[in-house]
Image (spheres, protein in one colour):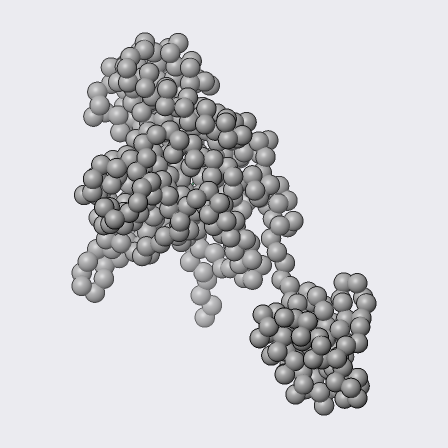
Amino acid sequence: MKIPPVKGTRDFYPPQMACRNWIIDGWKKVSQRNGFEEYDGPIFEHLQMYQIKSGQEIVEQLFSLQDRGGRDLAIRPEITPTLARMVNQQVNALPRPIKWFAVPRLCRAERPQKGRLREFFQWNIDIIGEDRADADAEIIFATLDYLRMVGLTATDIRAKISSRRLLAAVLTSIGIPAERLEPIYAVLDKKPKLPAETFEALLAEQVPDKGQAGKILDFMALDSVTAVAGIIESNEALGKAIDELCGVLGVLNAMGVGEYCGFDPGIVRGLAYYTGVVFEVHDIAGELRAICGGGRYDNLLRDFGGPAIAATGMGMGDCVLEILLGQRGLLDAQVPKRRLEYFVAVADPQFAEAMYEVTAQIRSKGHSANFSYKRGGLSKQLKEAVGQNTGRCVILGQEYRDARQVVVKDMAAGTQETVAVDQFLARLG
Ligand code: HAM
């Protein structure tokens, strides 16, 4: 009986594994050069962790289980709650600001679709202990630093930036009470994914007053932060939120990534814990789901029983990223192909023992080497070497018997040299 793979999961054969490793290596490299340190947590947590503050959408998508002791657990759908728990546990011992990164494997029981699977990898960068706009800007900069490093340009992607604080100030200014904000955020977050009439009908359920709903639609159509002042009467909260957002955009300009960034009031984010600046990076063509998303979540550590410490961060999955890089031809050009440095071949089976010895020696010096398990002729062995994308073949034949020499053939150049085996091995370091 053949059992199929589970819906929404992926098998990583060596070529897919090479791609995954290349993506993750890039995430790690950029994290390090932006001053982040790596952490990780367990792959499952108490179910309650995700019921506290992640929001309804995530809770509906949990893979939950009960352990043998009857405890309700869930496989992590995100790592931010784990991060909040871990920081809270050692809060007084950790030097601030905390700049940490992780690349967890996550599971969400989403409806599998283009760019959204049930198991995926997600790069996370977070800065904890800093409430200034610099930290938000740094998160966005590091995100773009990676996307630029892998070859995406301002014609491919756009970082759309908004602010929950700004949205709250706008909604409160037009007379929406504070306790009504969260369900309205959930509706506004769906705007880009819905036809206009469906969205307006959903909004009307939350905001029956036509005047208020109209103001919200006006706000959602703005394309610059400063234009907010043109439609909403200014007040202190609004002014602060606008200044904060302008601050973030200013730092991003100074860091040289301004052309990638812009204000977009349509960015609200699905997770419930965001409190301030929020952002997502999208493909400019608008064909794909968000490449990544993040924002400020100043209350999460407090909601998890810790002190009130400011925090901001971002998560980027590997799925949409891989689709976009594939579309732009940036994977074939960059993902390293299988490569073997040396293939040790024998012109005659009598040299088999030397073949084992030389192979082991090459490997012990830190270089990759294979030999053929078949006892075929030399040309068959060389063909096998080509199939493994070998750099050099080391051939043991007549010269080895006569003078302990090997023929080293450069497979790309087609050139070869005859050299004493000890000298060849010595050269390897
Ligand atoms: P999120 O918006 O739920 O945020 O996910 C962030 C990114 O993870 C998405 O933009 C997408 O790239 C990827 N992603 C999410 N769900 C899936 C899926 N089912 N399949 C493939 N990729 C997916 C968070 O997870 C926040 N915890 C991010 C964060 C960190 N905010 C602050 N710090």
